[in-house]
Image: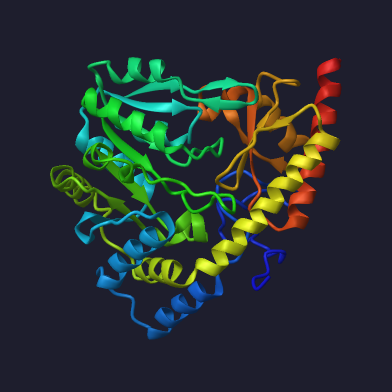
Length: 391
């Protein structure tokens, strides 16, 4: 291995949102990796830092080319330059798009359980969340198209936010599923906004499918949010892109993000993104292998040491969705217990809605030694929780 993912870097005292916890606590919750950024990216940022002047930044051609080349080479999707808009982040983009392309009290459909901040982007803007629950059977989820059509056919539903790949369950949606979603949304006049921020974090040998690449319908009726931030651990740089093939929709999105003042890059946003997409491929490939091994470690540990839990098989993200229904139907209380009793800080599943009350979410993007510590804490926590429940 050319990159050292076993290295443990102390993030305490660094103003880290994730690591602003008590000394005895181990945070394995928010989607933020505990690996140092690829040296190629750090070197590019250092060169920009050494320039010494940090005024307003503009978008050079190399920014457009970096996105276009990466998606063509990695994901077999040809994006035209004019489709790309800069935004400071996927969440600011989602909120701006909801505000601009829907009206107050309209519905925005999401398939739950799903990334919790989708709800914030919808509710904080005075729109309604329309849930389409995923069906959980035989230890995995599937989409019920009858339920989806019921939600999309509601005249009050104006938009669907798709999580592709899916967070928290790590699902890579197949081409047929995406095609059928696209056709139904077109039929009922519902715009698709596809959050594809986790797209590069797939299992080795697995590829995600960009929603807009599936068909002309999907291309024409979609807005795609992408970024290097999850993939390369660059969230603090505030850098992302919005891809809008339809010129009519693109103008509305452009107006929205400029009205909200989230369309201008900071001085490091372009440098980091370009370096990631141009020079970060080898680092990413090794990262995916490392995370895959971590996933296998968790699966084996739960099977042999904590059989009360069930780990859903997943093909994407570094976030694991763990079924705890054998010991609790209140994942919020269970997560709080784990943190109090063992210091292990995980995400409770309730915030993702759907059937999340039975699940916790675990972030495994960390060195193997840290993961082992987390698993041992989880085991102790489960044992202590069951003893408490038996009283």
